[in-house]
Image 1 (cartoon, rainbow, N blue to C red):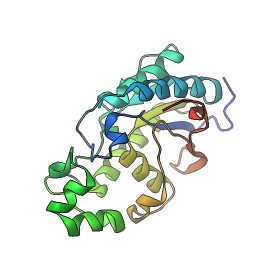
Image 2: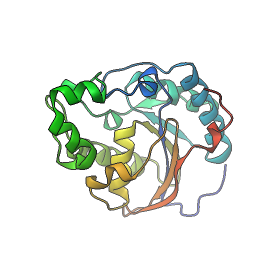
Image 3: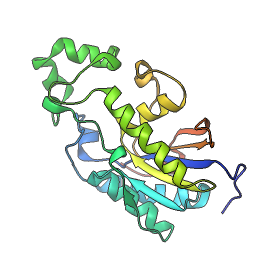
Length: 215
């Protein structure tokens, strides 16, 4: 395992889960729980091997959604660990939009859907959550995990919305920058959190380990 630069810091390896059928045909997933598809399972294994070889960890945390746990299980197994679920990594609730395609949402809430793609920080999804709720949840979870693993490297497996919001937070950006931070399936992000809670970004949206996988 590579030596830590700062023994008071925590290295976070933040990962998005692998592909599901709902990633290929775009739908608002949120707290609906489609499983990884065949490619998603291969992505999870490739990510597990990559993290073990490049960014080895001593603990693995996952959203309690099945697609995140399947991804985390592969990563934990590669390190001879058991993953743990953490509610802070739970995906956003999309309420009335959950399971719908953008086209289906457009027929019901055209103005709100336009706002989601232009000003996501200002949108309250009907019957669901907004980005501020997700940001509060995931930043509190990050603080707890980082404080519990000083001097260690830890994997956190989340979702597109969760990861984008968390990355905005650690970069000191508002949620209006949500769409400026891409998060592909099984992307790896790496950053250090020091004892004062300040982040140093090392890697963003790294998918080089998926390059040779066929669709």
